[in-house]
Amino acid sequence: MRPFTSLRSTNSSLTWEIASRRQGQPWCWDATAPRVTSSLHWAIGAGLLVIATPIGLEGHWITIGWFFEAGALFWVGYKTSTRSLKYVGAAALALGVARLIAFDNFNVSRIVFNDRMLTFAVAIAVLATIARVVARSAVGQEKRALPFLIVSINLLALHALNQEIGNAYQQQAARDFAYSATWMVYGAGLMMAGFWWKSQFLRWQALILIAITVGKVFIYDTASLDIGYRILSFIALGLLLLATSYWYEKKRSPG
Image 1 (cartoon, rainbow, N blue to C red):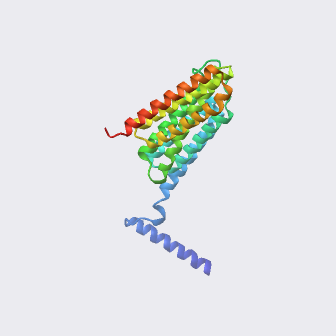
Image 2 (spheres, one colour):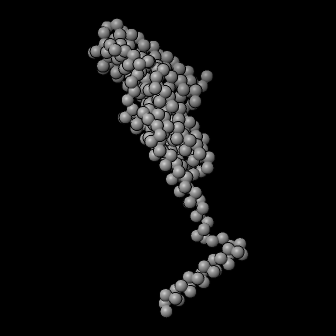
Image 3 (cartoon, helix red, strand yellow):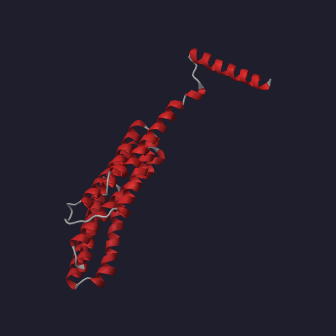
């Protein structure tokens, strides 16, 4: 008799739920079901899209596809406040960066105007777009991703420039000097961007990069470069430090 009693009790509770629904009283267990189901469908669809990218594309186009998907998923995720889309977008972004750095092999015949720079340009543009969306729309702990995105943009940009320098100069001395000069110019540009956007975080990155460049010039370049490149390195570094100091003091002074 107990099973039938339990079944009767269950039927009675279901009848009460239906009656309360008809009277305009919401079901407590039904309130969040549509939202959870919708998020699950979003996540499954986005995940299948990310998985399908290597099937439909080849080579560096897989990396570009993942970056475009990451940007679109982040944008839709913030527009619709769908957290699952943000997570899948972060996964696609991580896959794109990992493949670009560790797996993509580029046979470059031209400098700058090649598939490698195109892929890096897409990666940096998508990261910059995501950083802008996070800066404007993120709240709480999601804001913590912004510094990571900014650092990733600068590291990818420097890595791309170093790759181009490696292909442009066959002579070791010229290549080492080009590395130092590029880092100096990039650090100066980063410092100016930090003052322009009033970002202390960008200025700190610029100072770190300039400090690394100074260390490279004094420790490595002085021992490996020819006298001509060595003199040019010291002159360029001195001018950069003077210009940076002048700009820094000018922007900091109240007058």
